[in-house]
Image (cartoon, rainbow, N blue to C red):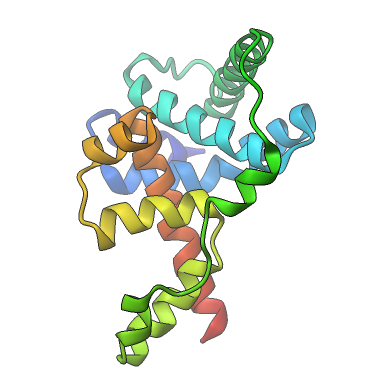
Length: 180
């Protein structure tokens, strides 16, 4: 496909619109691949985010003799294998019932004071996102943290944060369009 090749070339020189196009175009392929491997939606999504993060970081190494989708799937497969290796290392167990208490979905006192209809609507749509998307949006847009600060706070690579934010903004835009 000529359009994909053009976006790959533009992404290689740092064009953010092309990165977003490639993310949107190939997201479902990589996510479905991981969902079949993991049988866990959250884990599949995390590996997909890591896949795009690594791919965008290493896009200059992409060889156009191969299909871009195949390259992404290979990266995704390797990330999954690496994550399985890490999981096989014994760690301290964490009470899974505590995980549900991490994200507070009730509006804060600040949210209740906001009377502008557009902001209330936006907050409603943000709350519909998965907790890890809510978190990066809150840090970036409400607490005005830099990508670097968010990455340090969440102990994740900066590229993962960038991909999560891209994905969160896309899902948020889709949610708002559906509601209109």
